[in-house]
Length: 411
Ligand SMILES: *[C@@H]1O[C@H](CO)[C@@H](O)[C@H](O)[C@H]1NC(C)=O
Image (cartoon, rainbow, N blue to C red; front, side, top):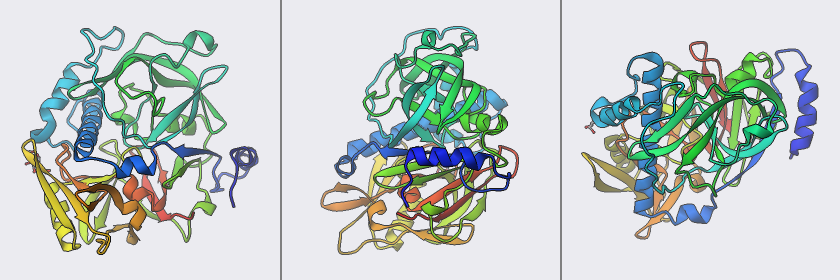
């Protein structure tokens, strides 16, 4: 059954009044895939490298935020790989109440964001199309979009932010406290950013809304989903869920949408101490420490592990030097497709042919499972290549009982 946004919202209003143990979503956001399949298929080696650089920079920023918040290094940081990058971001962090000094180097970066959905700031609502990202924890929009003067609920103490992306700076701006509306649910005093300078490609999304944990938030404030829960908008469970397909996406808030998956959700315990949705699993029998990241297109793991998994699965590894390490792509021909099987909580999920194929190179299809040293210590980033195959539920506040649940996604 295909529910329209309006009918889901109408349903949501009534569900909200039900007893707290109801597991249906309180609200849902349905949205579109931004990047066409064609663009992905045309991915060149340069584009893959630039995506990996961006990914490294995103994680370096989260590691720096963690260090500033917690006063210690993130447990997942590989200091010998990107310790210097993280230290530089920490050193350049803007003081709470003054403008950042120096100029912002602007570089064009290839945007890899795939999904954008509506979220509004202010009164009356100013609506933006944002990338909902479980791999980061701040919400901010690109320059010129948010008009604080046009909102009666806008306040700021002048707090600045700077989202650094390693070689340059991706965005700087001001943090506001605002009323935020998502899926018809409204919260007050949410910390949100408005960039004044940015290198994000503004045709692709209006910004990012992070669904990670507070300890990697630069704004030193709760992410939107935590505020929704604390202000009583999600019912009894701090829960949200994503259903991502190649063309459509949905975000369910405060429960799960049973029509979006088959069987039942199988949960796996999350270690939230790093600020990420980190959970143990396996890939083709090898134990992996997985960060579940809706804001990343592919799956990225240690080069040696990806090489071994690719060879064992009958793929053709393509190994190229990359800094002090190597980058490993796993190629295959249509005649023989390697099988990739993830397990979480003991349940297994096999990648579909469609989700597995990420790019074409030299007549080979390149799998969306890439080996690269991006500065994580023995952790894997598990993004859309895997998530397209499942409906994924995220549950619990940082430091509490946190878990992720997966079930095969229903079309
Ligand atoms: C950490 O980074 C170094 C340098 O890139 C690399 O050789 C090493 O394998 C990495 N360690 C882990 C645990 O990923």
